Amino acid sequence: MEWEEYQQHIKNALDSFTFDKEILTLLKQSGEKGRSIFIGGNGGSAAIAAHYACDLSKGATQNWSTNFKRFKVHSLVGNIGYLTAIANDEHYEQVFTQQLINLAQAEDILILISGSGNSPNIVHAARWAKENGLIVIGLTGFKGGKLKELANYGGHISSDRYEVCEDIHHIFGQFLATHLRESNGGQ
Image (cartoon, rainbow, N blue to C red):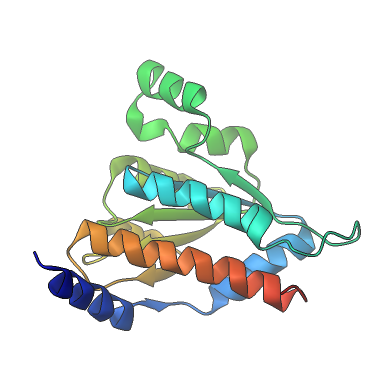
């Protein structure tokens, strides 16, 4: 593939990307209400999930005053010892769900990032979260898969290329952090 062709794939995917605007309000309110945000994904989406956790924890919080309600963000891909223990002792399908069982409460937010939307551990976590009163945000590509069906809110890219989906999911994370910071009076 030539650069111009890849560039066109990105432009088309970005133009096709849609998301539920309620996500912006939900994330902002999570800080105001002290709710936690959990984020997970596999492979490249795991790296993006870790980046979301960083940007929503730090990048969305430029107001360093002590009375500013910060976002409580947890990466479900960051504790590699715990993640691999669950995968080894239980099943890889459980790696996100078991962490949520320990940490999550009703009305917390779970952001799951998946190109296909069909990874068993993603689907299992989304089902558990919905059954236990969490708000599920699914970021998908391809046709959205089971995650798109399960999520309360979502963002979707009409692309069947994993790398393009990951690029757009990454851009969306940068937008979320910027939006939250600026809506809270930061620059």
